[in-house]
Structures are given as C-alpha cells and as structure tokens.
Length: 246
Image 1 (cartoon, rainbow, N blue to C red):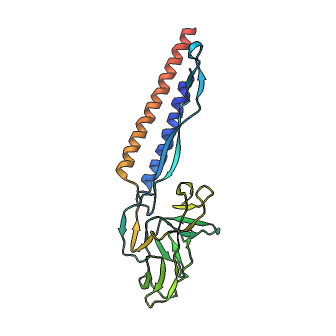
Image 2 (cartoon, rainbow, N blue to C red):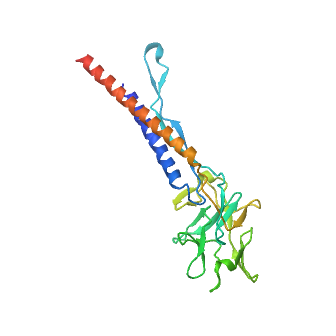
C-alpha cells in the first residue's frame, strides 16, 4: 500500500527539481552567453510483486529528474557598440584563468580592461591568452579581428584571444558565474575549428525562450499538484483500510 505514497513523493521531488532548473533559466534570460538546462526523467527501481499467476507483475517506485546537459543552440546577437563586447559565431568558448589558476570556459564575451590594462571579464577574471593594452590606450583604439587577434589602431599586435572547444559539451562542469570547467567526461579543451569566429561590438544573448520556459513552469506546477493529490488520496485509502481492520 505504501508504494503509491513513495511513487507520488518521487514525482513531487522530480517536478521540484524541474521547477528549480526552469527558475534558474528564467533568472538568466538576460545573461549573455547563457545556455538553458535540459532536464528529463528516468524510472526508479522496479520490483517484482504479485502472487499466484501474477508473480511477473513489476511495480515501479516513481520517477526522478535527471540533467541531460545544456542546449548549445546559439542565442540572438545584440549590437552594443562596445568594442570589447565579443560574440562567438559557431562552436567554441572563450577561455579565462580564475584567481586559483584554473582554466574555465564561457560564452559570455562581455569584457573590459582592468586598471593595469589587462583584458578581463565582468568578474575580473583574466581572458586567455593574456592581452595587455599599453597605458593610455582606450578600448576604441583597439581592433579585434575575427580570429581573435588584438592590435592597436597603429597596427601593433598585442596578442590573440583563444577560442577553444571540447569533444562533449554535456560533460562540462558548471563553476558558477556562467563559467565551466573541462572534465574527463567532456574531454580536454582544444583549439576551435575554422568555422568559429569572433564578432566585435556584439554580445550573444541567452538562448532561453521566455515563453517556452513559462509554459514549462506551469506544466511542472500542475504536475506537482497532481502528485500531491495522489498522496492525499493514498492517505485516505490507508485510513479506510485501517478502519476496516478495526
């Protein structure tokens, strides 16, 4: 009799996990380079049940939410006019070095110059390969080519922004702040192919479709309510069964 309670409770937990991921997507609808999370469901353990001729009946224990990775569909491009706002067209990631020395990947190309003239992202994390601008040079005097080469208006080359990719993006480990780390599951970072290029004065926006996300949130809410009602009904049935025994 308790299997129904367990299955309904598992359904509520799965829909709560789905709701949490959707809420995170909605919160990042305006975050440049953000990719929405894909969530699916899997069956929990089945067990044999029944007696006599029904011994082959298999009873499930509900479902659980599981992460299927992030959609790598490109977001829309938004013109900003800022020469240090960069968007990747095609596959690939910008590579940055965190304060602890760890390399991280991101599609967020909202960059700036720190007080020492180094190219950093919004959190002040150094963009790879390190590009340092001569003192007194303004961002408008910089030219960033489609292959990531950075030079001044006078033609002096300062370095090259590296674009990298991994064999399996679903294996990337999220680090927060729209940063990801390569893992054994994703494979090591390697130079992006020739099909990837950089566009200046532009940001790739989030690929979250707000209307779809809100529709999915309503669906998750209704499914959560149905699972809650199932628990209430199971509780009533158990109450009746206890009354009959007395």
